[in-house]
Structures are given as structure tokens and as C-alpha cells.
Length: 456
Image 1 (cartoon, rainbow, N blue to C red):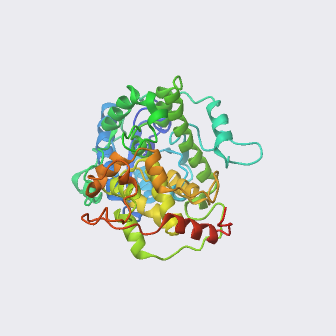
Image 2: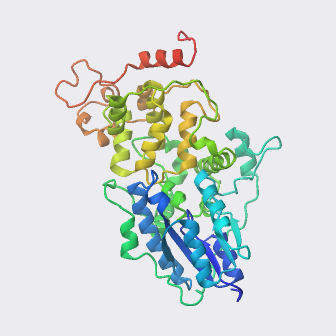
Image 3: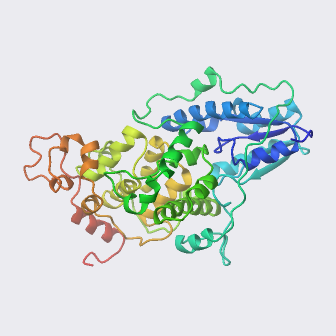
């Protein structure tokens, strides 16, 4: 550690001490002030989802303990990020502010406001750490970002990674209060209404999940990642979103020496792909990247049925009820439920993306919004008129046990009938609705509205 001017490290979506380039750079320049600001703009906005706030509270407690072990502690403030950072800079006479480079429109605006708020003699530095490779790497020769995943994957996997960094020795300057989040600050993270079976957040829980995943299950990822009943996925999305795990450490620890591990690392590449795309196209979060001329339907009753898992389509309802119960949804179910909302019900993808973000423990803007656009056919890759048949998807990906787990009123149906119980007397004694829409009818309407030949 240098004896230079104090350095402020603003934590955002990087709530760890290991492989934290901003923290290491700050520690090399002077005493470090680790800072987290409970951002009033987020706490009072649509992204203040109870499940993520609960994980954030747990992650801040763990982060403070880890920083204290390294010789510092976490200073927590509440209010406008730029104003609070400027106040801490003035209090301790800091010479620089360090943070991890993020890609969302809000992150860009936050960085700009922060730089405007700092005195001229205080520098600001954005470091890698949110993704495996920084958003600008790799980049195609013809443009600033890859629009198609496969060439991005080829370039991404051949690109040398930076060397991960360890935990630096830290020291706090002066009399700064860095005692972690107090009870009043944690109370600002309103955690009422969380999913009853949500995961626990923080460094320790994230490390346990990663160890358990790499200790065998990852090797079966090729065969199991789409299997709804067995749920053979990593469950690391929230840990990566809040940065309690380093995506680079995860990629290097997984390696690519078995088909399962290569397939898992490919998913980390998908995450980087969406982040680099959002960095290049900030409007991706709210506007169609490839408009298809959609005229969305205003159907509040159908939307409510989808949100509560009462569409009459078992695999769709199982996915939506898993979201409410766990604050998480299997990725295959995310694709099926999103396709059903946008192509069967013809409801705007932004409405669905917002509902996911209200409930997901991950709720990553880049991943969520880009995936919704991919499914809808307004984003990158894929055929814009692809429409998933939920009944075929349910049978193909073994959803019988999945449906029984989350739609218990159908538990008595056999493995064939449960995918498509219909209305032919099978449900006469069960409190379960008929399908909101017939698949063939919905497909014809969708193709017609997209200007396609319905007969194809």
C-alpha cells in the first residue's frame, strides 16, 4: 500500500474483495475508503425489487466483514450517489475515486454525474470487473460491437484474459466511519414481500454455491441445462449480478476441459455478449433493436393471469409460479414464458421484462432486456418469427415433475396428460383454468400481425 492521498472505492455491482481491480488500484495509490451509497434513485424506483434488496443487504454485511479482515471496513451512505461521493472525498481529502465500469444507461449517467461532482484535482477511474472481458473486447473490425453471438464466442474464447488479482492489504484514512451498514440503513432496503424460497445473498453463500456447482454438477451441464425437472443449472446469476463472485474467477475455475464446462463458460460468454451489446446500444433496454412493426395488445386480465401463473398452460404457469416462489426461474422456462406473453398473448415485451425485474434475484438489465428482445424477435440473432410451442417445449424438456412441483393442483395427472390437460373433462374437479388461447389460433394471429403467410 502506498502512503499517497486517500483513494475512494465506490462499490456498485462488485460486492467482493477478491479480483477487484478498482480496489487493488486504489490500495496501490494510498489509504482506501471503501464506500457504498444506498442510492435514493434506485431505492425509490422500479429496480428496487424486494428480492434483490434482500440479497443486497446480506451482501453488504458480508462485504464489510471481508473489508475489515483486509484492514478497512465499509462506509455506507444514503442519498444521491454523486453528492455522497463528493462529500466523502472532501471529508478525507481523497485524490481519486475508483469504481468498476458498468454498462447500463443508469450506470453511464451515474459515472457522468460523478465526474461532474468531483473537484478538478480529483481524478475518476473506471476499472474492469463486471464481466469476464471488458465490454469493448473483443470487437469486430467493422463496428463497435458484435450483433451475432457465434462470431463473438469465437473471438471471446481466443482472447487472453487479464490476470485476476487477489485481496490487497487495506488501511483507512483518519477518523472515517466505516463500520458497515447500520440497522437504519438496512431498514432502507425494504425486504417485505420477498419470495418465500429465495436464495441467501453474500460472499459466503456465493462461494458455497460455486464450490457445489464445480464439484461435479457442471460436468453434466450439456445434458442437463435444459431439463426443467432436474434443474441442473448453476444458480449463480444473482451472485454474478451483484458481483459477490468475480465472473473472471468463475470462468477460470470452470475451465473448458469437459463438454459441460465448456457449455457453462459459453453461458458466461453470453452474459458478456449482452453486456457489450448494451454498452454499445443503451436504447436496447427500452427500444426494439430490430423493430418488427408490432402493435401490442392491451389485455390486463390476460397479463394478470400470466403474472400469477393462471394461463391454463401448465409449463408457463409452473415457470411463473417458480418466479413468485423463489425469485428465480429456470432459463428454459424464461424463454417459454416470454414467448407465450409476446407471441401468444401479444403483450409488449417491456411489460414482461419489468415483471421479471420486480421479482428476480438477478434482474440484470443487460441479460434480462436483451433476452426478452431475443425471444420477441426484435433483438439480435435468431428468427424474428420463431414462436415456441409451450406444449412441445414441456414434453421435450421433461417438465412433468416441474409442473407438479409448482402447479400442485395438476399433480394427479399422468406424465403424458399433464403437459396439455385441455378442457375435455380432465379438469372438471380441479381448480385450474382452461388455456387463455389456443396455440394454433395464436400462431395464426401472430404471423398475420407480423405480415407473414399464415399457411407456411
